[in-house]
Structure formats: structure tokens, C-alpha cells
Amino acid sequence: MKLKVLGCSGGIGKNLRTTSFLLDHDVLIDAGTGVGDLTLAELKRIDHIFITHAHLDHIASIPFLVDTTGWLRDKPITVHATEETLEVLKRHLFNWHIWPDFNAIPNRDNPFMVYETLSVGETVELGGRRITPLPANHAVPTVGFQLDSGSSSLVFSGDTTTNDAQWEAINLIDNLRYLIVETAFCEREKELAILAKHYCPSLLAEDLRKLRRPAEIYITHLKPNEIKLTMREIERDAKKFKPRMLRNNHVLEF
Image (tube, rainbow, N blue to C red; front, side, top):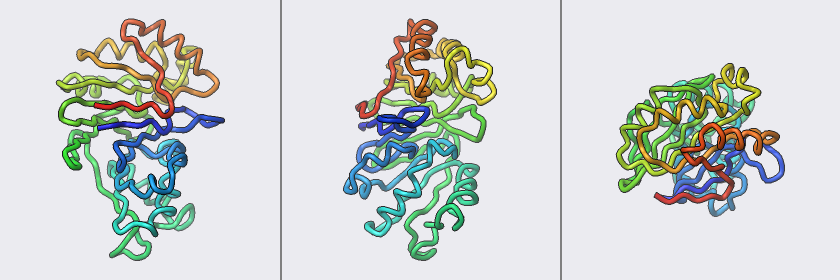
């Protein structure tokens, strides 16, 4: 399996894209603004979108992707998310007010987009690839994901904060290789991080101490105006874990 980083920023700006990853050629893990950098040919190949949660920086490209490619495909795009997240998409996005309901276009029997409900701990298998939602702790219902090729696994934390359940699940993964974990705020904004249910460097360092598996650790979701500061603080507080900053176009094979 191969995961390409399309976007990993906590905001927008020149060369900054919000959370989106391309798994092999046909699966998106979240669909932030980075999806817009794909060519039309690449967009047409996307068959599945797995969504961690319904915040805009993780779903912004779904409407444009379906609108752009639906007419060019012979089967619908499947959006995988928890029941709570799907309800938000249906009620507040694909509602004919913000965007057309592509679950009914061209018609209900032949839509451009269909929904599949995810549950924490229940694995979806796609051609030998195993994708498992993991518990997360955020301001809205959220999951992380384990992506398992069989030989090794990558875990994406999703947006989360202190969360024993996720670390317990990660510690059960025998073939863990990569861990992509968010840190949205620098240390001086710790109170805001707690309120918004994101990590800051000290909270991240506390939770990394719960990790019982070796893994290459990458940091995502950094705020654009605090990237260098937050990474310095992470390297200070979690130095022994050798965390690195995730970057656009980074490719992880596992």
C-alpha cells in the first residue's frame, strides 16, 4: 500500500492544503483542499472516501470531486463514515441548499455517490487492504484509521486529543510501522487545545508515552503561523520518539 499526502495543514495559504491522503490510486482518507491538486484522470480513479469527521477542512473537496467526476464514471463514489458524520453530510451539505444531493443524481437508482456506515473497530476490506476505524476524542464525533496492508500498518489519529482508547487500540497492532498524529496548537494555546479537543506539544508528549509499539511518527495539522514554533516544542517535549513533520507530497509505503 502507498499513502500520498495531498494535504496536512491546519489551515490554508500558498502551498498549504488541509487534510487529505490518497491511498494507492483509488481511496481518499479525508478530503480536504489537497484533493484539488490531483489531475482529472487521477480524480476519476477515486472510488472510495473514508472520512474521520465532518469538519470542513476534512470534507471540503467531496462536493467538487463528485460534481467533477460523477458524469465521467460508471459507478458511484462510496463515502464511508460513521452514522453521525453521514447525517451531517446529508443534512448540512448535500441538501440542495449548500450543494446538490448527489445521492439522488441522476436518480436514486443510479446515483453519483452512495454512503456506507462505519463503526469503530469494524474493518472494511478493499482488495486485500484493511481499513479499521479507531476511537478518537474530538469536539464532534470522530474516528482515526488503521490502514493495514497485511505486512505493515499505518495509523492516522484523525483530529483528537488525550484519548486512552485510541492508544490501547494502537498498542494491539502487531505490524505498526507509521503513526500520523495531529498537533494543532502550540504550547501557549494549551487551554484552547483542550477546549477544541486537539493536541498541543505537552499533551501529545504525555500520550506518546502510552505507545508500546515502535513506529515512525509524523506530525500533521499544524497551524500555518505556528509551524516552526510548534515543531520545536514537539521536538523538545517528545524528543525520544523522533517525531517528524509531515509534508505535502510525502509518500509512505507499507
